[in-house]
Length: 237
Image 1 (tube, rainbow, N blue to C red):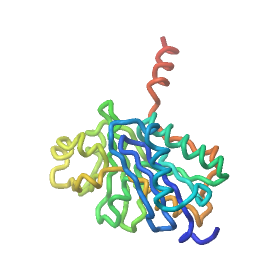
Image 2 (image 1 turned 135 degrees about the vertical axis):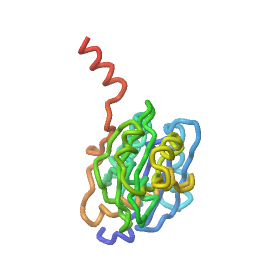
Image 3 (image 1 turned 120 degrees about the horizontal axis):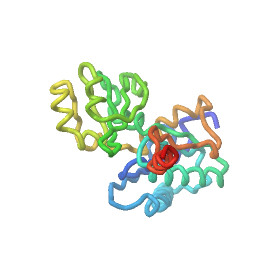
């Protein structure tokens, strides 16, 4: 299929507690489900997908392309979302696209006239963060994705910056103390990773052939897991 306006996309985000699923036909959002509840993605994800497909009148076989937000984010959440997308893509024999959670977050501030800082709570008193230029709509990275203490991220920023992500609520006091009026903080709804934004980013990959076989879809963790840290500690001791 060459017409990106007709490509049917299923996108899944499970990088944070607020998991979401979206169906898009080209650039048109057909349906989206976002659940910000205290339950695991394994309890809800397949049900969300089934509900949206039924509401849209689509069958799984109608899908042309599947996408997953690959991180950084919750290790467990990412594994669940990616495994779900990989499993469906393998059964359907469809290509996949992996999308950065930080770039997806930056999509919440399209056409922003100042740099957009994705600021995702990474727990352990750290944030996943990356700076983007969003003036042309598609977020362009201005540096690498990092996991650092919030103060280290904030001290590196110059001029006015617009913040998006769960780290804004978690570290709002620090942001305001270190950035003052240079920090632009949008309303709460702008701080969630959304599968619909991931689907739009995915659509940009379609005409360029930037898709993957399902088996090549991998998570982006940035930092080692607790299990890996324990193994390294055991080796050193």
